[in-house]
Image 1 (cartoon, rainbow, N blue to C red):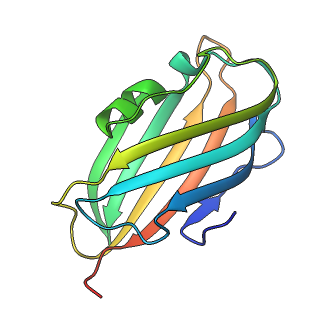
Image 2 (cartoon, rainbow, N blue to C red; image 1 turned 120 degrees about the vertical axis):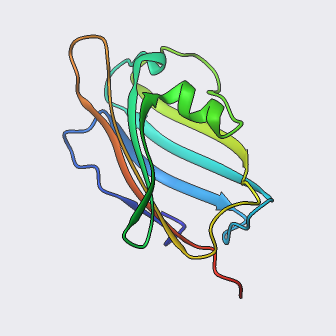
Amino acid sequence: MLTDLIEDRSDDSYVLEIQDITLTPSSPEPGKELRWEMTGRLKEQVDLTQVQCQVQVKLGLVTLLRKTATLPEVLKMLGAELEGATRPPAGKWKQTWTFTLPREVPMGDVRIYLQSYTGGGEEKDFMDLNLRIDFRRR
């Protein structure tokens, strides 16, 4: 990982083996764009429209958001969308997403937990990420 803001908690049993995640800028700011570039390897073909994401956003001990949605729905909430094929084959996989962070982001140490699994009846772990972004004024 090129950023210390993201912890990949996936192990060898996960369908997606993340090789790199780059955030630009490296210190996200409320109201500004954030570019997320992720490269990895899919161990099998996946229907990305069926990937279920459990998202939790916390500010300290307070849970601000807890939601389960498909990967395309989560990206749409953030103003982004999937790139390329929705059923990519096993092998190299790359995604680039550009988000505009809300101005209303709480000024504090925000934690985002993203756990996901494939859908379609035969659920397998897809990816597991923890993001820590400090939005306190510098």
